[in-house]
Length: 82
Image (cartoon, rainbow, N blue to C red; front, side, top):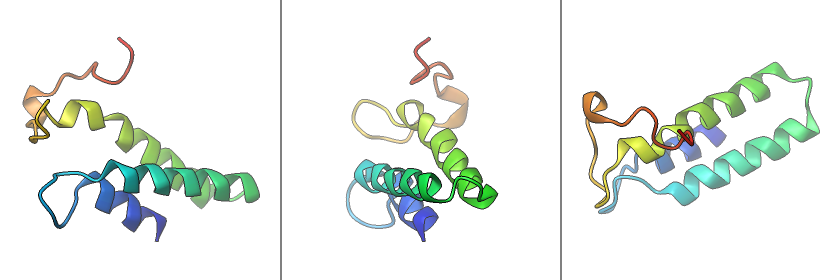
């Protein structure tokens, strides 16, 4: 369920906006909370890692007006602090 919420935020299935970052942010927050509750659960840790890795690409995948930037044109350093 958390990944479905995250995915809807990463690529919105409805509306005018390509993404809904608040949904992804909330899914990550909840996954972190779940990971704190069950730190030994590898599936929870893996899900959180997947969401964090995917979300790290968000700054590179959309342009200043919210348009999708093709992968070949994305700035690989965007969002990494480089």
